[in-house]
Amino acid sequence: MSERSDFTFNGGVFTHKVMPNGETRTRVKFGDGLVSTVARMPEWTWNDGLPWQEAHSHKGLTEVYRLISGWAIVGKLHPQFADRNAPWYLGVAMTMFENQVLAFDPNEVHIVLLGPRATMHTTLTGVPKGNPERNENDWWPYLELDEYVRRWDAEGLKSAIIRAGGVP
Image (tube, rainbow, N blue to C red; front, top):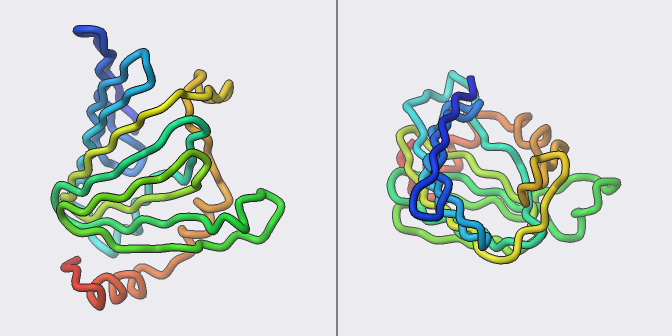
């Protein structure tokens, strides 16, 4: 389902693509490591399954999320369990609402679930450390965390969002 188009303008590479979970991303990436992305999630229902982004970290970049509209669930791997050989444990799972900001330092493993019709702005700053398996992009997947959150019960997560004041 991944569709992509790129063009260069004024020193930046602009990319627009549709991700496997259905969200669209429009990104500008500059050579000095600055990246600015707007992600928009289409409508989805709890019966569709949970359209998580892929769990990841960045080794040289700080990632800042600002939720523009809607809600999101953001999970962070507990640092004690950042070793791939250790049992997986999500140390922090929080609900974000409009205009909230959350930052992840380099090497902090995290995952995002955007609510239906949510829009998020993301910036990456720092000195990228390229992953040779990802075209030298500073993006490092954590498949074990992907598998962990995909086992979550949709109804239980929906109830937690409502308790936190969200409107799923």
